[in-house]
Image (cartoon, rainbow over all chains, first blue to last red):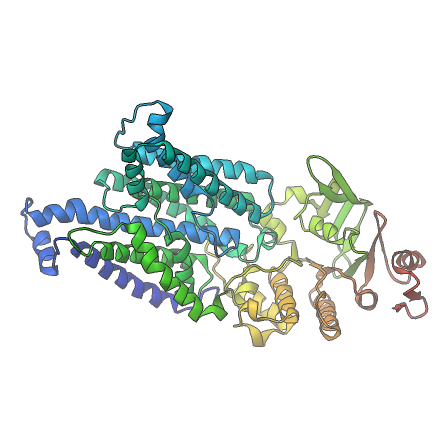
Length: 340
Length: 258
């Protein structure tokens, strides 16, 4: 017997297979459906300029990869927050990181005319504004938490920042024009399909760096399951671990929110879902599992939101919550004794 | 031969905020040896937990110095320190899905590699801890399903698995009935005899402490007294701490009578 129970390997393999199926499904569903035979044709033939080819490489594939990156990143951020704060309600939203990103975007879109600077939006201004916003809130929370021993206080400070930023956004939206408001609301609905390959590469690079750091903090995270004092008594460097967790979470959430909008629910629910399925406390197993399930869930949500109804598709933010929240509630209620 | 294992020099403990300093106990000069069972007694709020946390490097001392096996606390890295002193705290465990075995196995963290992989030696140490605390039959249970007595033994097993020469326990018998209280003290005494570990227990169980401790640490009015119950002076301090109209120390039997 070990820290992990042995069945996790077969579970991981099963979910990897499911993941591949979801990728194919995601690529094929849309206003123009692509069959398996079409995939084969596109890959085997050298024709470059067919319609299908164009849709697959310039629209469907970036969208699928964006879904995967968002699912992995948000899921893992949520897991880190929940373990660190020892609170099942913690998630990237709770620390105020997502609100920070939203604030950045709101200031850019709605505040620019108000504050008197040019509304010219170059390619990366939106993600840049969101990242700056996320980083700003995170830095402030970190400075405020420097003298706080109690993690619950940090959590509350994060929540306060969330309220504060949403209040500022309300004020901004009250004074902004209908056009600007619409632009902001579209961003806040979230979209996985607006990314160019250039942006995908950037996101992929940042996320890979973050994931590499995770290997280093898996063991301290396990120790933190017993609380901070026990973790410290077992040799964990709390400050270093805390800083790593905060930076990884903010970079992951900040970037994802910047490029795809605030995708609700995933960061909070995926870790719960994973723990229920895998029944494992070891973070070296949980982290890839959370990544896989996060990717699967977002791929499925994106697939559902692109099932063509009247040639329109649903915003991703609505789909994730509409599909996910009932599932999590059902899982928790049916297994409540073991879980909470 | 007894080896001096934990030393403090002119130690002052308490809390320090930016505005004020609260000293709970000062001028503490302790010399603690390997294989001893020590009980720390004192009234509520005297600073027992603070002393234990300071000795466990979870709190910084206000002044003075601490040494474990002649090495200053500040010279030891977190990992090295974790191989010297383990703790059983009063902290409530956070919600988690750890089984009893996994909880105990976490005690091996200072020794395992980056992935926390258990070697056969680690597993041997874990099994030894399980054997000494007699918890073989609950290994697969979740820690949240345990009774207080079981949980306390699991946390002692975790500290044992950490395989440190010193184990500090903060009120390990609170919330337990007299049967389990006796059981915990018996287990701890047994551990110290079999493994030559130094065990320091803070407790309110005066009579159990008098029965099982080799030496007593008495905290009273900002001073710490260390001695055996046979010392006249120790008996005097004990009576000063607890004697009132309601309880009385019986010198003949070395027991408190209620």
